[in-house]
Length: 321
Ligand code: UFG
Image 1 (tube, helix red, strand yellow):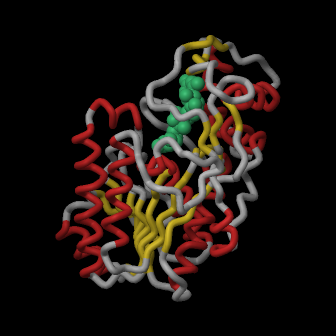
Image 2 (image 1 turned 90 degrees about the vertical axis):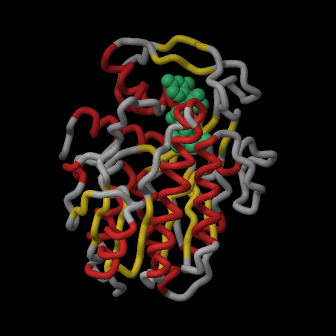
């Protein structure tokens, strides 16, 4: 079994679920997080180091002293709207900090680097489902910053896996891990809140060229994302080639279909109001993830929409059974 795994951003949503998965697979995990958005009670599967991924002395010492052989890098800012308002913030927090991290990891002899990337690197696709070989042409500063991170990692010489997530969703209620963003901007938690509070969910646009007029996204359960990181690391540690992989189901759900799923699962009505389009939203983003299945043996086993919603609902309600 390989050496120790450093998980940056391991106090966040996807990072914490992935740290848990590595620990359950028998790997020793060290979390590095600055708590700019993470939660201390998400770190339960290994030692925590509080600090900045761009603090080169800190990371150099950590890689050496904790005998880190693999890095799984989540720590990032990930709000498209915020990136449009403040591109420099994203260039600094994502690109610059990742470049510093990558430099120190490469110098320190890290032999596998797994990166939390995004379908936002594709921009508005001219082919859906989107193949992993699709040109990268991000349309917002968040996507640009992640594409630059991919470039830095690919240029580092370290064996690497660039994992481009589609819409991360769901939760692990039994472990009390799920989406806790502030502010929350994501569709499923907001729909669940509308169901609970009675304050209507705004549907951002009903005039898209999709069957019901609302945007289609490829929702992928956070447990399946975590599993892909384990598989990507095993792939690299087996000496298989570096690369990029899409992580999605290959199917999509519209905003209205998500609302219907919430109504089915929660057995109640979600109040909605129809609003205007949100700037920068492509009509449909669906993954062609066949290369992840072929190369990594990955299958999104938990990503049926009602299962995603049921887990998110159980998490919101605090059910841990
Ligand atoms: N939506 C609404 N009402 C809301 C919130 C969202 O109608 O109150 C719609 C959006 O317009 C979109 C869909 O629900 O069509 C999903 O929106 P999310 O904000 O949940 O997710 P995004 O698809 O915008 O964003 C996700 C990730 C980003 C990533 C992006 C890639 O959260 O990190 O996919 O495009 F960059």
